[in-house]
View 1 (cartoon, rainbow, N blue to C red):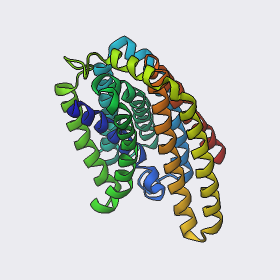
View 2: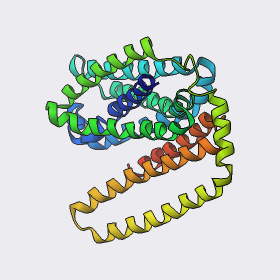
View 3: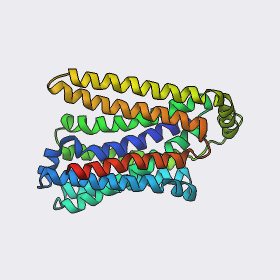
View 4: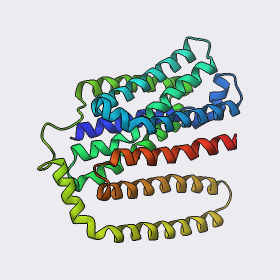
Length: 291
């Protein structure tokens, strides 16, 4: 169970790391491919669109090929994107068009990996551990983003950082092919569905209370956040605003996961897909407007 959870985390970390390697330092990325920074932003916009498409088609792919094959394909797509990108940067002409295609493939792979995380938690973890498992899976996005920002500074260059991404992507792909399974040989309790159904019955009476807590918490949180943004000055304001953005996504993700486990156990993958799509589409649209 924990090995499968670790592999699911690894898939999300790797796709996030691959995705943010350009965003972490747009100036260096632009200089490597001899383009202006605005082209890096345009490439990011295309990536967000590919990510939205991946999130949208994930339920159909999961129902068609199964969870194991889906995760393998996520790793293969990410590996294809990062390997061709590394070859283009080191051995080829550093074509920005080819780099954009690679980045689009990576975006598609990350769109595919986000929604099945709920399915992994539902199949492999007992009811009392599922919300924590989903929360841990979702937090891996930030680990990947952190690696994208930190790694180039440690290893010295964008190209060296890409090399490490390739190495870890190969390891992740091989381990997933050898170890990952779509469902446990024995369910985590009497059965995953019985556990889920009993969880629903036990929590039905608390649904209104849970929703009230969510809206009350978010209202108080945002009131505090806006007050702090107004008070913090200078460079600290930028740091604080970015922290609030990340915290808001994590808080919302945790609440959404909890509600899905209460109300939408059987449809959690489809619900996740729509939530993910309507999360990334505004990113894509706002990115285009900013550009």
